[in-house]
Length: 122
Image (cartoon, rainbow, N blue to C red; front, side, top):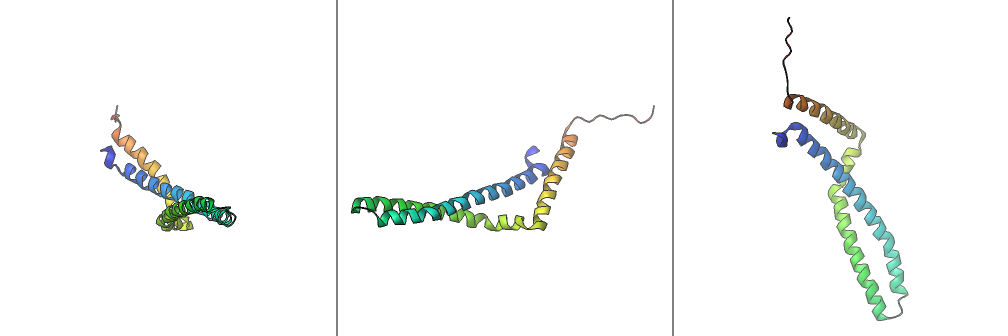
């Protein structure tokens, strides 16, 4: 029953949102880093002393562009979700969902725990 509990499903959703935000931020930083690396590689090609060195730099350039593309795809894949929850009203909803998760866990612990009846009369 634990697998399908409302608390578990809510927790999975909130973890998914957190994961999207983390992936987005990391990938966004990687894209920016590769953009900065571009100028270094362009200058390295410009000042290469021979064809062999230019080819090595061009290979690094190609790898950099592929890595940048992979990270840019991650940014695009998560961007709408991240931007949605950056809006104030949606962020408030997300925070209320986190509070709901805590309340739901308490309720489920009570329901799944050992309950005893305490007589009210005498």
